[in-house]
Each structure stands twice: as C-alpha cells, then as structure tokens.
Length: 455
Ligand SMILES: Cc1cc2nc3c(=O)[nH]c(=O)nc-3n(C[C@H](O)[C@H](O)[C@H](O)COP(=O)(O)OP(=O)(O)OC[C@H]3O[C@@H](n4cnc5c(N)ncnc54)[C@H](O)[C@@H]3O)c2cc1C
Image (cartoon, rainbow, N blue to C red; front, side, top):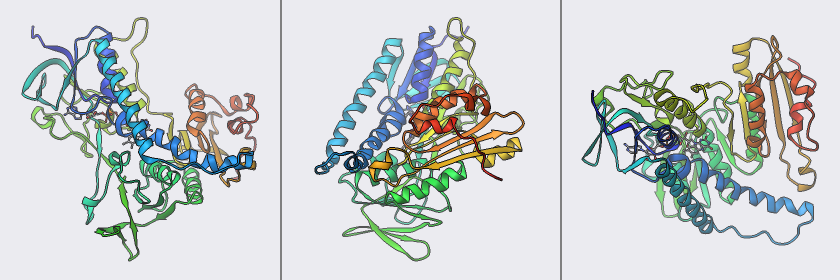
C-alpha cells in the first residue's frame, strides 16, 4: 500500500483552507497547510474584516452629525487616518496569530511558502516535496484591472486599507458590492467620492428595487454616481490623476480604485501539469463534492468562483472534511445548498438580502406577491438625516412561502441573518404575520407588512 507524508495537504490558508485543515486534523487526519502570505487569507487581511472595521469608522462621521438632534452639542472630532490604519493593522496581526494558533493546537503542520502540484499526490513548497493522500486547493482569488490606458496608476481593493496619504478625491470604478462598499466607506471618512459604473444600475444580481434605492441613498450621502459611464484613460499629472471618461468628460482625483472583477488564483500552482480542469471563467471545476477532474484533488472557495463569500468557503470546507474523514461524532455528513444564502453589502446604508430577487422569483415560481415598505426610521425623526429604509418581501403564491427578503437600512445584515433561518426552515407569509414584532424597531416592519404591492 502506498504511504503518504500526510492524509491531506491544503494549499492556501484563507477562510476555506484553514477551516478544512483544522477540522480534518480534529478528526484525526495528518494535515499540512501551505501559505505564502499572512494567515487568514483575503477575508482577514484585505477583505471582510478590515473593510467592516473601516465601515464602522465611516459611520461615526454620520453619527457625530446626527447626535446634534439628540442634544449632543460641540465640535465634530477630527478623523485621523493614520490612527485608524495602525489600529486596524494591530487587530489584523492579532487575528493572524489566532489563526496560526488554532492550526497549531489542532496539530496541523504549517508550511510557509508558495505551493504547487507536481503530481496527483505530491506538492512542492520551496524545493521541498510532500506527498498526501488528498490535496485541497483553496488558493482564493485576486482583483483584476482591465487593460485601460494608465492602468499602472490605479489601485485595487488590496491597497485601500493602507493608502498614503488619505485620498481627498477618490474615483471608484465598478458597480459590484466591493466597489459600492469602498465608495460609501471613503465618502463617510471624508473623501470626495465619484463612482463610475458602465451599467445603468449598481449591484447586478440584486433585486432591482434595492439597486435603485441604494443608488438614490448613496447619492444623497454625497457620492457622485455616474452610471452608464466608462473610463477611457488615466494620466498622472502634477496635481493628481486625470481621468478621461468615454464621451469626453474628465475629472481629477488623488486615487483611482478599480473594483471591476476578480479571477481565481489558478495560475502557477501546477494545475495544468496534473490535469486539473478549469471552467470557462478560468476557475477550478469541481463536482458537488468539491472533487476536481483529478480524483485525489479537491478545491473550494473563491478558486472555484461559485459564491465568493467567506461563510460559503467555510461551509464548503465542512462538506469536504465530512466526506474525506467522516462527520463529527453523532452527526450526519453535511451538504451545501446555495439557495437562501444570506448576504450583506456594507454600503451606507447597508443592504441585507436572502433568497430571490423579484425578477428571479417570478422566473422560478411564476406568480409571486410583493410586499414593500419605504419609510424614514424613527431615529431620523430627530437626527436630521434624510436617509430612508426599504424593506421588501416576495411570497410564492402557490405555497405562501417567503422566497425573497430584502432590506436597505441600518444594520441590514444583522436583521436579515435571523430571517434567513426562518426562510431556510420554509417560513410562510402566514408565519411572518403571526410573529409578534419588536417595537419600536426597524425590523418589525418585516412582520407587519399586510398590503401587497398592486401588480
Ligand atoms: C474587499 C473584499 C471584501 C470582502 N468582503 C466580504 C464580506 O464582507 N463577507 C464575505 O463573506 N466575504 C467577503 N469577501 C470575500 C471573501 O474574502 C472570500 O470569499 C474568502 O476569503 C474566500 O476564501 P478562500 O479560502 O477561498 O480564499 P482566500 O481567503 O483568498 O485564501 C486564499 C489563500 O491562499 C493563499 N495562496 C494562494 N496561492 C497559494 C500558493 N500557491 N501557495 C500557498 N498559498 C497560496 C493566499 O495567500 C491566501 O491566503 C470580500 C472580499 C474582498 C476582496
């Protein structure tokens, strides 16, 4: 019988890889994990965590303004970008350490360096070879910048957390969630933000009401939104970056952020040597069990470019672990459903969403009843803010099941997480109606919407 150095060799210490390595080791497997950069991957280092910390920072700007209506008087504090950066860096370093510690405690061997496949059971890291019964590719993804003239002057989301100096004038190119979040965050921190997107609405894939509503709310906060617009060229001048838009207009900014797409990290890791198939988008192709075209090699997370979210990567990791090393004692093997995955967009205001958009619900379920509320939250009766909140429910007529729930408003992600549980459990509109609201909250609106929107 062939013997291996390890039962599992994980390439990439991000959300998915760390979870898979740690849980496999806890099931008794001999596990190694290779990571060439800081432990924790995109989410911890240049994604979810620093972004949310900066989003909190940005919200304080509004809160100071809004506090006047509640009797707080005095001068607005001054924002110190270097202090925020230093505090963030300290917290991220702490998290990096925790990830390493979790792996160590579980008995995972951490190998520092760039890993690549040599054959279906062998990985090389800096000239050292390791064999494993199974190999897991969890190398994540990277932001891409299109071939626009002057692309050498632009930055991607990776650079936004440590910009030096603070960009007084920022151009964000893109209309997805990463672009929209950074537009809101830097606007809240005090930049003059322009967001340019080539389509006529932000956030493709989200409910159209949400897309229209958030564009209006973001504009109200001072972001200059230019939809249906594209960058033609970027030139460096003595006073900043001169950006020409197709159609002839131009603007000068200090920083240009491109957040127009991400690609799977599938290059330079020996996939072609071993014959691991990629899909048309260049991501690693896997079956329902996350097995690639080479049976001993698995892949999950952003490198497979399915739903690129941290909880999805960690959920996929649990499926792989259960399958390779058995489920936890007394539990059934897990599986992963991509339906009713809740998600938030940390724009100002936030978006929270679970289930289908109205357009997709109509396609999938036929007749759908829509409930919608658009109102000024109680807080803003005194805050002076003109911010409004949108809440929307989609109900499948045939079953009365709530199949879509969308919110644009304060802490929408926090609100929607709980409703996602109800929707996974198949909650009907009748169940929503029979649920007592918590008063006075914004969230209670979801259980008090009685009158459907007329077709
Ligand atoms: C700006 C931004 C904001 C985001 N915000 C959110 C959010 O709010 N909520 C959310 O759920 N998701 C968010 N995401 C997405 C989330 O970060 C990813 O979905 C998640 O990190 C994917 O995990 P992963 O394990 O697939 O890959 P990653 O976390 O990217 O980890 C891959 C790791 O592999 C390493 N690696 C790559 N190649 C090699 C190699 N050859 N050898 C050794 N190591 C290698 C990399 O250094 C990296 O550490 C955000 C992403 C970005 C960019």
